[in-house]
Image 1 (cartoon, rainbow, N blue to C red):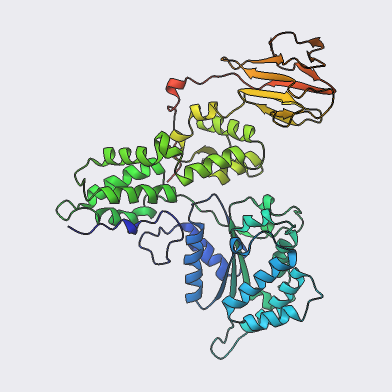
Image 2: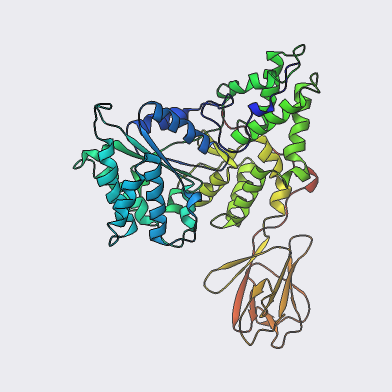
Length: 492
């Protein structure tokens, strides 16, 4: 028997540039060609899409072509920093990787009166560019490509980094008068939308940059994974047709999502040596249920947890986001729109794709896990609108009062510590009850003596606060049929 090789498939971390399970996509060609031409490129997409592996492979190819390459992983520099410390860290990392650390440090120390960004950009001009000029060994000079990975970390820094992005744009704007900057190219990679990274649209580099799309694996692209499956079969049972049938069923579930595909392939490769005659469809379906679809799996898999947290706690209004996802999942026609923030956040969560300009759930695993039951238990049926327009989501129970333990805290002496309670009933209706408050609770000007059913637009007066109740929706899902529904497969 051939020894099984589950390590052929990699489900976490960065793949080696020569890893046999690396799947080449159009993004590989587009990014390499763009950076070779000196373009500003960016890869902003959801997690576990293969960004780091793409960066590693592209960096390796660029080095083979003679370019100097710097990789700045922003997670390694910390977050509790001053502006100067952050730029000093970037400057030191560039110096180490280009093996000119002493020159960079000397330049940094002799220009202390300048700000951090100004020192970094002057070091690029007066220290780094001369290193790239033509030499006898490189008569045409060398190019420098700077990868900035995990760029979304800048959102957690205690200072604005708008100037950093403006400086990158400045490097490209200076090319007509300073041709040396044509030797420098930047690539930003991370999980964020361009608008999340820079506040001032007038200085954003993304308007002049090239967006690189990381798509899911097509069947043809992912064919390099089939030999890895076949290699785990006993020699007497090895069969390329059967390995292909297994992979087809894997792709049926994952639609080529990089992590989900590698993870399911890995699980198959681990069980094939002991169950070589399992029917492909039944084998893959059983493993898919174990590692993704079961109740326990949904709470353990990192990718599913990321999607869930991004859906519930990402930027913007989670209610709007989940309602939009509900429309997409139900098969309603929702056009793709780059200017729609809710669509952008669903993209960063990784849960949707686009087919002929219309949005669709990305794969059958997500379609099954994030089903109508999941939606139903995470969408509010009502909201309270506070003065000023802020809205508070109402789930099953909402305690209102002056005490900080309440769900809705109203700080005023006229409000009791535990003043009132709103509860959802079985049919999605809400009732309001006064909890024996000192100054009473009023609905549409009438005192609340006993639990009262709230109607859409009801005015609730508690002390000096006026709240408006909004009934968003009522339950529609049939729990018994929660996991069913039409799945439109994204294009291959």
